[in-house]
Length: 353
Image (cartoon, rainbow, N blue to C red):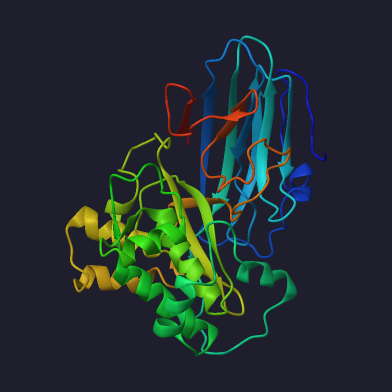
């Protein structure tokens, strides 16, 4: 087990010049038009007895984002920052054995808008990117999804195939506000809904997962990117936080990206969220603008945690694999808690600056 293990009530500060560079990839280029946010997790687990283990997602360093510092304090008996062994997803881990089980974790992140060039060229896919062509428990690449990919997407460059997968997803899904959290993202279940004639209802993880599955089934590397909305959207205000809002507890959001010479950002789910929240049809000019904007760009109101899917945490959890790490995850005596149940799993996330 590798990581940083600290004693009860210890305080950890990480910087790019120090330990953090060992945990996540280095920043390849300087950020432009950057934004900074600080936010805090507050977690209290109402279990006087029993062994409790907690994992929290930590912002990852990329070319468009960097974690400036992280610090925490609480009643933990052991703690540390780790990465999983497949995706390199950073996470905070803590163990609790006393009667009080609480922790506070503070992060400051710098990030920028993301926009890339869209080039009609084909590329040889690097070895380290081929991981994102493989199936996972929730992301199939054969069967029904392969049938749709062959009939609706077909050939073309990586960019052309990704566009057809994206536009198919936007056309054939709808946002269902009754789905818990961000959805499970089980593509097998979602496509059964399509075949049953009820439509593909869901939220951001569902829509991003369908896009990813269609891309992979078409030979285009793709992955979901799990994260958190931290400020109002400058482009489409109805999809994100309201001005002045500091409560991020329910602001989780899953985006996606595909590889065509570089990682290209997309967000089909926010197109559908815009349609629902503003009562717009697919052919409305504002929706058309959003659909084109979110193919190759992300507006800067969100920070990324990781792109890990159907994976094993570090240290390993008892219930394997974990679907995704976007919400806090905890186990009591080896049994997982429901991250969306406030009575059994009390946590809040607040922006503080």
